[in-house]
Image 1: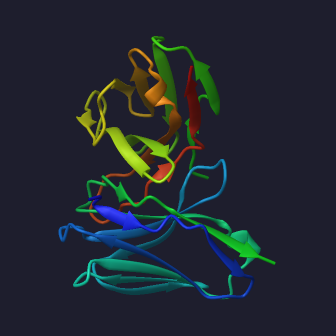
Image 2: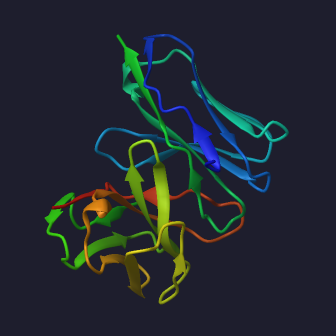
Length: 111
Length: 114
């Protein structure tokens, strides 16, 4: 069993839809949780970062962490075609910055 | 603007060749990483380095070695390339420090071993 599980998709939604992306993990020692966005033929770039449990909002993006369920989510409101990318969840134990990644979910937002 | 630069976007090498992948960062970061990315498997850590001349094995170090002689440069070496090392290779760097976990990635090198 992988440490971090993520549905690979692809997930196809119409423009304007609310998108929900999720990851589950097995190791309760993870403290830092991140979402990276990766466009085709590019390296991943950090989208959202959360420490421990709770919610964090940044514009159209909301990240949620539920440590009791070992479950994290990324919500995208009013999705745009420019949001079409692969979304990778990542997590780490400490400030040592060793990240463990999920497999990524490919999102397609259709105009 | 922060930058992590990988020397090649695409490489084609023959089985058994020694392959060098180079990565340079201009942000004075202490930490540098090499990942490989394969469909459905996400990013898997090969090696990382916390400081010059320091290296630690990641999850899949077999068949790879690394070199960090200068703070800004981290090289990945495939001692004898094999077809199962065909993959996308991503270099990343991040600053040291409590709570600061943003890793900045390069554009990736797509390596094909034939």
